[in-house]
Length: 191
Image 1 (cartoon, rainbow, N blue to C red):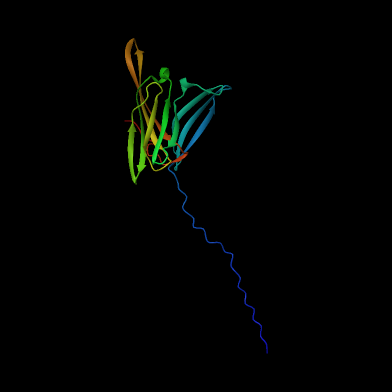
Image 2: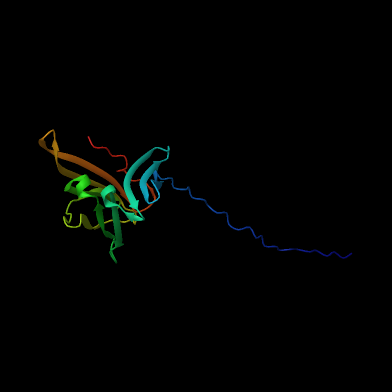
């Protein structure tokens, strides 16, 4: 009697099971709403939308024939860089507004979260350039995510019923370099 045995050594091609990491859910998502005002005018409003779909508006840019109308706009521009070989984040933030509409800029500060060595602190940057309404900054920060807040105070001489008065206006603008954010300054209100 002969017996033939076949032994098959088949490798299974089951790929390793992927371990899925939970998807990060951010508190806010930035978006821009565009409004056509007429044939030659358009307005953009930056909003932050919370997870519960509440919205808060911040920057406003009005365009006339595709050029920003600074008399009806209030916004910031942000340029960032990482200092080579360090954990320091640097950049420049410019605050754009119309002094005839808003008034003279009296105070301009930029508050940012600095995360370094597992410690989070709030830095208030106040050394602004009065000619360009800008602040240059460089601070320790372990992340490439910038979260901050512009605070500005404007003063404007006005006449009310023949009486000289001083108008006072405060502006808050949340600042982020990504569209999804956990910026704790969003929704801050002045009292």
